Amino acid sequence: MLCRRIIPCLDVAEGRTVKGIKFQNLRDIGDPVQLGLEYERQGADELMFLDISASHQGRATMLSVVERVAENLSIPFAVGGGVSTLEQAKKLLRCGADKISINTAAVERPELVHEIAQECGSQCCMVAIDARKQGDSWTVLTHGGRKLVGLDALEWGEQVAALGAGEILLTSWDQDGTRSGFDLELTRQFARRLSIPVIASGGGSGPDTFVAVFEQGEADAALAASIFHDGEWTVRALKEAILAVARGGVPRGETGVPPSASSSVRLRYPC
Image (cartoon, rainbow, N blue to C red; front, side, top):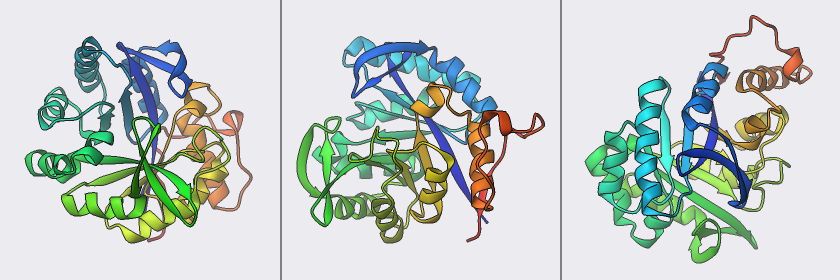
């Protein structure tokens, strides 16, 4: 049996978790360590912390956040955002991160993927790919989705896998923020062409969208943010509802989860 992971994502600026639209009109929604602990209690399989601070001071603050997260959480967590050198990656890993996610820096210097994989292990090297539909294919975006770089997304995925990446964080720019479901075709093509795990991101909302990306998109994991931050779903409630949908039952919201429901529900599908 295969486990499918649910991964809450937390945007961090100057040591605080923030929420906004396209990184604009940010508002403080809490301490990242406390939020991380809450998501762990709810049954999150992993966490993603995305550093969106632009300043050098912000980078130093993020190292402190990573240390505090590592001291308090027992589940794996990845850190991304602005990592552009092997030394930066090693600092974050020394502070306690389990994985490092790189995006723009990998496109600008693909050797960085190989360096991190060689020095730290492929299991620590996650490459984030922001993909936008163009005709019958997808192209890669960098710089927070602001720059088209002329790379075919699937070919880029194959290249970074060959360089040693251990996992792909795949975000559909077309679906991101729409809450209309993950891009199933994009995710499925990546999952079938690559031999490494693919995390789907962009468009997740109700349990049916997660069932679809696991079963039709063939994703190994799914990442979401707002549905957890806004309290629409807890991780535990979402997992219970996903299992209900997968079994042909009626999706249940927060009030439909039995009080005894385990916080460590693992989503399993046949191989």
